[in-house]
Length: 628
Image (cartoon, rainbow, N blue to C red; front, side):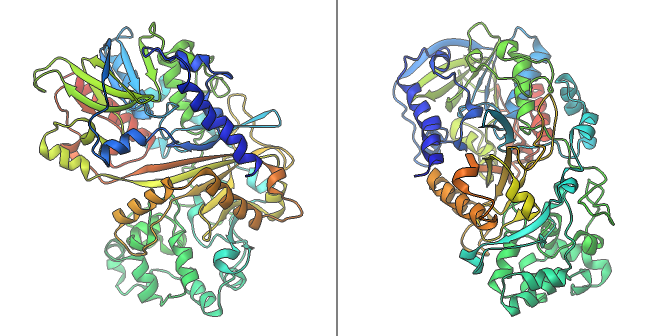
């Protein structure tokens, strides 16, 4: 294997193995402090996200119906609140609980991953002594001008200044370096490695300041490595507009809501070229899954192939919350720009919540001051803390001490290092993936159990690549490359944010992070979305790091000029953040998220969302319900 695979094996797998060889005092995380170098998950590379070791016990419970976890050690630890899930919603719930009931209240947060934050995953890449930061999942605030008072108040508590991003985000970066949206066609699928300077879709539009294509539809289609028939069909798709619909103008919106995007491509536009259909199917990336089973409205809102915003906006039910693209500019730009990012995405919010509750974990008094703070994870689970965060701990059972509606106690069993432990609390917030709750809380009311079991998740993959320089990207003019033939459907420069002492890469000779995005799809085109999600999830979890490295090597090596880019020389590190359970899919409704005795439910799943503000709002609701 290459140097990357070997290094990541050492940094990731052996560190985890080392932990299991050390004596473990089950009331703390002294195992972390004993590790050398000190336990610090953000710096780990290789398989991240739902990493090996984080999901096995949950899968044994959900798939194999495992109930017997061996003898259970009663830790004799009593808490006012136990939070199951240390993501943004779980951390917010803990913060809100102390805010409502006092900082002296004892709270334990349990999470199955080796780091807190859930999808808000911080990736650190050390490149020639320079630390580059990237996000491995939850990346930004979406439409903060619409945030509720609850969310805005929390952000204010954490020291977030929304206006600060107007200067922190370098909207001119892509123009200065002539970096735009392109498409990379790979040889394995399309017959040759070729970059065409057109994205053929609106997916890149969320990157504020990215250069729009100047190549005409006609020239772009002609340059594509498709057959002549395919080129003609691609051009037909690119030049489409609502007038091609078989409906009068007053029925356009209803037509878009009720008709299939792929049916439109095939039956209305006559597309049957496999290359064009593949481009369409891979054109929305992480905007919601499989375009082959999307409505036209869903596809348009996701920026799918051929559905140009300016051509199709009259068929939208309403202009999106961003106010729509600003026309007649040479860059992607919206009235409410997508600029509210920290260098590590929303991991900064997770870190600041932890810092507020466990002050000694690291330096910094607000979100900017902690951007570069190196947290001491040995502080997370100290017995002296009023809030404790216990990682690598998979909760497998939550039950009341008696009748759910009169009991004053809730018992929580979790697995750490294949051993079972139990703690007790006056209340529990289930801030984990909502579809797991019926497997953990086994005596839920029948209708609530059924509502939660109907939920699913969209599998997502955010890979960050540490590059020693980005000269090859500069030479090719690539800010983002749509990649319909590859596993990662989009690859590009990370958001140009400089804040809190962190400076975004300045010149092509400097190290940077390349961000690669993927929403794995099922192999059966046209299969029901839920089946495609399940198939893609199983395939994702069956891959090893070496599989991803081979794919990334082929992707970058085929896309970038060989006289400028050499994979072994220029790639320093790879973090594959794979989320088999990514975006929410399905809504449990009021029945699914209702309180059950001393147990309440948080997480953005509970309102069919994957947004930071929804995660916070559901945490607030769960705490208020617990206090009733």
